[in-house]
Amino acid sequence: MSTTLSNLHGNLTQEQEEEVDDLVILPNVDNSELIAQFKLSLVGRIFNTERRSVKALISLLPRPNIWDVEGRVRGLDLGNHRFQFDFESEADLVKVLNKRPCHFNKWAFALERWIPHVGDTFPNTMTFWISVSGIPTHFWMDPIFDSLGGRLGNVGLIDARAAKVQVEINMDRPLRFALRAQLPTGEIVPVKLVYSNLHRYCRHCRHVSHEVESCPQLSEAERTEKSSRLEEDRDLPNFNRIDAQRKGETSKRPLPQQFKDRRSGEDTHRDTRDSVWKRIDSRYDPRVDPRPSSKYDHRHDSKPVDRQRDPPIRDSYNKRRYDESFLSSKQREASRRERDKGKDREISPSKIDTRDLAKEFTREPLAELGLH
View 1 (tube, rainbow, N blue to C red):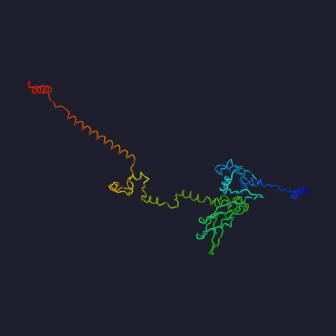
View 2 (spheres, one colour):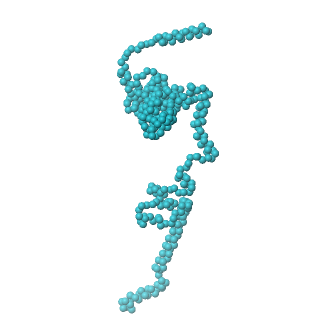
View 3 (tube, one colour):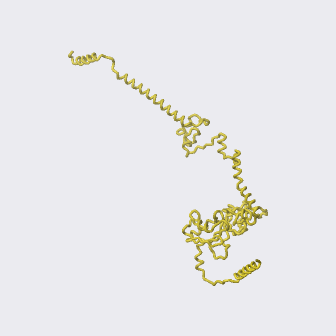
């Protein structure tokens, strides 16, 4: 048995020595044309090597809802969690670069223009906007933030008015979230750094390649403990809110002033020109109008508005309108009947004997003619 193991060990050692000695010297070539072909290429690298699939990334990123270059780019898996995208136009390439920092399922990955390089570590940088807090406002100047950003990486743009600095950071190193800075006046102040669009990273070692539950610097027990603690801290606000709702407690946040006024019975209504219904509603005061009151403001002659009365109910309003309409109909009918009776009295003939009327009618013409 021991002889067999010794033979195997001897064979492996011999193979390793042969690999070291078997060095192939490559010839000099003119690769300028090949390098020129990569001027429209981007190279990327995934830092999380456990859960991310390069094939899925190449398939999903060009889609319209992400990069919006589908059909105008070709993706290639370079191995060792690296990939390359070849674009058809400079405009599409620049559009994608402007979307940095890049994430895939909230895991950061580097993306840079292709350059001649050797090894698997390129690219290893990402550019972040970093918000700086702790520096007094009378020191918010470009040289101050340039000095702070230079401690983190290569400084790009600076927005001193917003206390922000753009820094290109080596993502193979731990992230830094705090610094100490000595002011020109001699005081030392703590500085807090907040990265824009940074999502998943290890809260223990501050690397972006994993989270705390898989941190290689921790034992299994420590990982479980830290993961549980982070989950509790993350869920604490929700638990407090749910527990308060179960106990019937109200939120500690103060109510807006308008809700306080409504609770106290004060009317905070403001009549505006855009609200026609509120202007004609008698529950509210009339709007002050700069026009002469003698011509327009007839409402001021009416009785004061009773704010305490209940708003009119539609059913009662309809019933009142119906009663008024019914009463008006009765009155109009009675008036019509009275008018009809008067007309009957005016045109009705007297109770005279028709024979007497005939005699009078016959006599009068004869008298006029002198024939009687």
